Image (cartoon, rainbow, N blue to C red; front, top):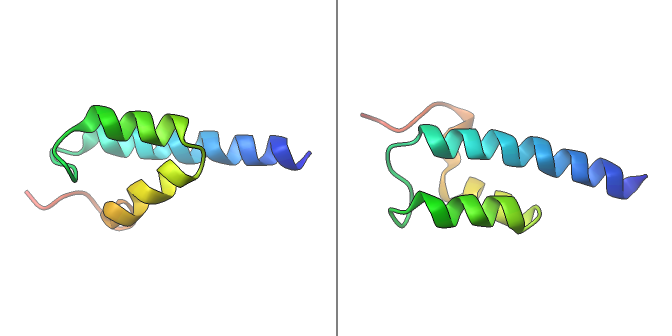
Amino acid sequence: MLIILAAILHLVLAGMLLEDLSNRERVLGGKKVPWGIVISLVVFAGSLLYLLCHPRIFYGSDDK
């Protein structure tokens, strides 16, 4: 049961972060594809790493 809950949580979080990644003009490192791979394949750690590097997801998008 805990594994199913963790999988659902990862899918929701990864979906939110992939949407944020696609809407951003700039990301740390300049490449979106590696971030997408890390968010999708590295369960939780990839999502947390993205959140640490791009904290503005919580309060708005990049300054333009």
